Length: 464
Image: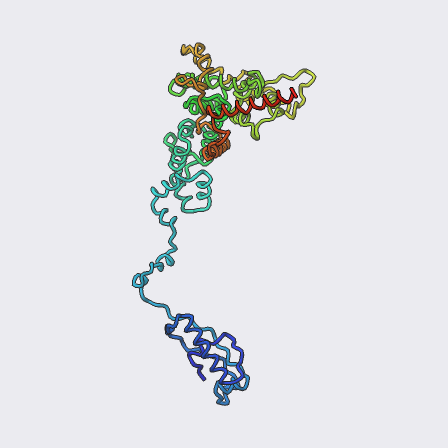
């Protein structure tokens, strides 16, 4: 027998059997009042409910009504879950709702729309950091394919935004080991049968790394009071490129190129050598000799110098001794053929040779400081007359004769944060009051009177 509609809507999933039909009616009335109170006295909205089927029970065959079964203590038959109401076929736009059916059917995402416009996609990718660009290249197949089709454009665009000077100094054509064959299989203009080489992520990482290392070297010197001119960053990068060359002939030829090593670069490089000597020969923090500068500039890169100047996680004394043994050390006859400080015998004293000891040449590889001095003499720049000016540059403002403060861009990241914190503390501090203010004439008179009174009292006590 079909159940009443109100009983179906208001009944609990498994109601406890009431004792009588009157009690059942009373329960249904209370539930109807409670439902009306929840909707604020308004009649609930009527909805269409499909018919529900019930499991057949033996008691249904005797023709008894539901009230009789309830009175006899029998539970009502268990109902199947109601099926959801039929969906409304009306357009969401008519109801004032956004239409999401197209998005659900096509799987719309912001990346899918960006991938359909390569120009916008690469403009967005240019503003990603290196790690974000590499991660997106690794996890997105569509982005991977877009980058492979325009690998040179992507790498150069990213490097020119994050490290413009390094991108123009460390050209990818000079670092073939950091390049990859063009994923688009474009031919080499000089060799039509070969695939051209394009910059890869390794070259981009190298460019960004050298940009940060040079900036921190300049900041480390400026923090210690040895400031450098703004062009020092570009000059150090050109010097780093010169240190990548392993033969004297190519290094000298690079210094002869006036378009690459300009007169201004030679002047700034000489000033850098003087400031570096002043830092390393400091009577308190330095070692008092120039051997450390020769050792650092004789390495294959500026990374050891950066570690030395930063001092945080930098080189220890044992590391410096090992570098010296590997760079230029001649063991005594009793120690030949033996390892020294963990350096194999075949690597002792070969770092100062051409090719850093990897070739057969035994000629000494000229350091950048010697090359710059030799080229300045060849051009007749007369830099030896400017040594005193270089020594005094960057400490005193010649117009105000005051100390030149360190600019924020010349600070290390952690020191810049400490400087900003100190500035906030000083700006938030309130001016002193009371005795903290400058004394005026009245204060001086009070102090003098009290002091004179104490002196007279002391004289009276001594007299008594």
